[in-house]
Amino acid sequence: MSKKAKRFYKDVTVTDINGGKTVLLDSRQLKTPGREPMILSQKHAGLLAAEWQAQGEYILPETMPVTRLLNVATERTPKNRDAIIAEAVKYAGTDLLSYRSEDRPLFDRQTAQWDPILDWAATTHKTKLKTTVGIMAIEQDADSLKTVEKFAGRLDNINLTLMMHFTAVFGSAVLAMAVMDRHVSAAQALDLSRLDEIFQIERWGQDDEAKERTDAMYTETRALAQLL
Image 1 (cartoon, rainbow, N blue to C red):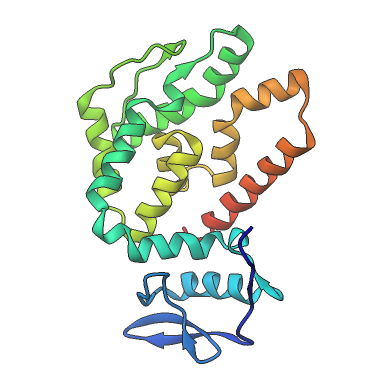
Image 2 (tube, helix red, strand yellow; image 1 turned 30 degrees about the vertical axis):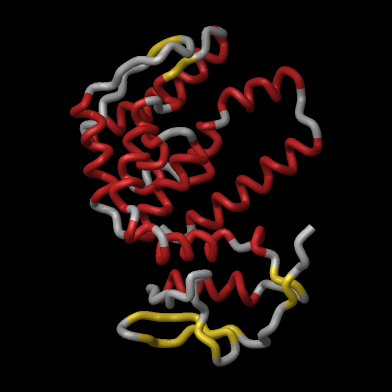
């Protein structure tokens, strides 16, 4: 087991730097693991500072999702934008919302709750995804996938990182787009992505360990949604 890092600072402040804001731990500027400075908006710097201020005797990275995402957005995303955008398009090609259950009650629930999101994507962004029943792969239209590429390409580094995180968590680029556009909340999108799991829990129940993991997922998702 890795040794916990003790809190090494007392005060956390936000200050001006190069036309933006940065976070100071006492008098030291907070940087990414690769030693790159983070120059942020007032809102993002405030969220970052709040995570560091909330740490107790030990620094617990698992309680700092905003810090982790901003580290990636600062250090990795600028060098990997094309690959990240391509990954979002790949998810859209096998988007969760396109695949419906053969179990009729679950199928009906998916249709009722997922179709409005697909209709929104088609109307708002011309992202028209086909649907199927079962797990056999279907090929999506290239033009529709291109709209996902354009959507992601317009985002700045922080929002692109955030979209890709949501896409991976939801298993759906379309749900991530809906969150980025404020069409649904991040928690609502997480609910939609978990329809199958929720359906099974209603049938068979949920153990405490699974509930703990789910609660942590919602906590992190809500925390990251504050970056929007």
